[in-house]
Length: 432
Image (cartoon, rainbow, N blue to C red):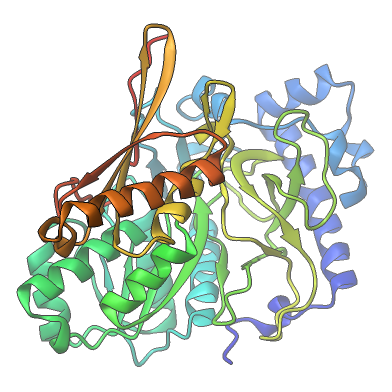
């Protein structure tokens, strides 16, 4: 099994820790010297850079949050002069001010190398043709993957997002072997390929998907429809973009690149560190970024950390595939509900399609949860008792999974809007 950078990806655990400690001391000194925000945070906490001597001191450092990025908009967290920033990306800003991130020339080289790591782990080589169906622009996904693929030496088809039929014709005509996009869009591509009669012309073998949480059941659906091996990768713009971690073909967790990042798992409510293997919120500290180093960034992503050596030979820690986000959690009549729970429950029942929508409303002061799910075309042609039986099975499954009984709507195939980017699964109509 190929490894892009075995020197670091297979480094003994004690050497990883020593390397992290050296780099942590360096980055703490740099941000204290060059970023007024961090200097103020340290001073308020009565903390000096000299107090941080190793990874063991990490918990002394205050957290950084997305609100800090917004409050320092646009360039308040940059640690280098603007003349050294060669690239700027940012979030869409749909929920407030966008979070702005910058890269030096060395940062871009690091980024490309990290993407090359997880692509190699997914078996991508210079012999592949890779179609990138992420949007190119301020979103980090398109360009992040582009230069990583280029680093490997594979052929790139920079299709960007949208124009689904054209995407599929390009795949067929160009002999594309690797698809890069969101998992929800991969599902839509597979569905459309069947409808257009193009499935037999596709030469896809691997999918490298990311940018949104997805379940094992959805992975199975994607693999079946596209005839590929589907892998997951993880990143976020505030840390670097795609390239923080990624699955190898063993698919027993995302290898997080610990020579560049320190991962922690904390209790999302208290911020206290949790032991290995326990589910909590991922916190990430960057060790090598120049333009925008971040200390203890609270990702809000829920996962668990494992440090055992993978059978692929890599020694760096692995994070489990995301269980959801702490800020995606819905509280319905006092019950905590995650969209990922609903997806898993729905797709375990035969007859459903991997397309659903969650509607949350408030009626007469009471929260209501409605789940819409597409079912196979044959269900609508069957006798009414088949529909009733499926509805009862789904309700029972959801009730047992969630601890409450939602309303359920079975809808016809293709009636729920498809997305070419991140899928919108939850519509919360409650007014506080």
